[in-house]
View (cartoon, rainbow, N blue to C red):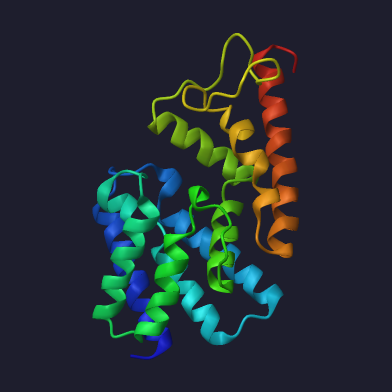
Length: 219
């Protein structure tokens, strides 16, 4: 099977899974998220001059990076579960074992909890591309969607933005900006990813500021 046909086969199967499991996962982590991550990744890859083969492996990793979320309906350990599923699928499709290992490792370490350990270029770009989708207008929208899915309150009535209290994103959706999202640019792997992350963070913080002013009746 040629590279193009293999990508099409994987994309078709992934879309089928997301479609059949609709309602089992939040729309913050739907197939549109997968496609945005792929777009981010290819943009970074282009800027870095990645080889055609590495872009092929990166595309597979992006398509499959969250595949366990629609299947199991939970985010816990989703990186490892998705990596295992990806390996099985790609073996069935006849991909070279050494290439499968690259895709497997990239998916396994892509989550925030994995940090930024020593990784190859495919792993680094996948992680950056996924993190970019947590920032900007898209990131704001996804945060709100997931907060509702997780049953969190939008904000603390006592203090909308956590200036004089600890950020508590287990209870307040807005606090997720301060407990995690503001730290993303400092943890990006690539220069181009970091530059984009900083711009998107500015947009996200502007949205949060406007939201707080509206809540407090000041805008």
